[in-house]
Length: 195
Image (cartoon, rainbow, N blue to C red; front, side, top):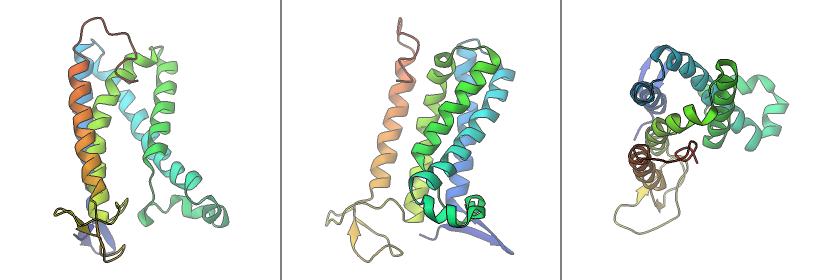
């Protein structure tokens, strides 16, 4: 599948970017609904969403820079900002999201787990969209296989491979459903859903 959804002059709109935007859009509304259940104001969630948005994006990019190819970026630091060339890491996004949440909680005098227990639920769903984007981009490919549902990633090599992105998307959707259910349990300690 072509990773470019459409081209507008010199600009490309990619499936990955659309799916990431959709993850944030859907995540925002889920977070608002969950916050209402915990009697957290909509205005406070609006502020938190700005923190978590930038925390995830900056963390994902810095994770790519630090964990994958720091020498490449040290040789030409301006490339750090060339996000259109690709390069986001999920573990960097996770770290950035935690740091953004800690900062938000400190500034607004809220317990970390009160927000974190809610935020992980839409984040789990958002990761489903991201893995579908990885599939379309032909990245994070699986091992060579001959199973009937194997996928060929033309830009990677010509071999049939496990679509691990689909496996992870299914797993992350299951995690989302589990977290959505677990939050309703009585007498669970604060931080349990996050952990």
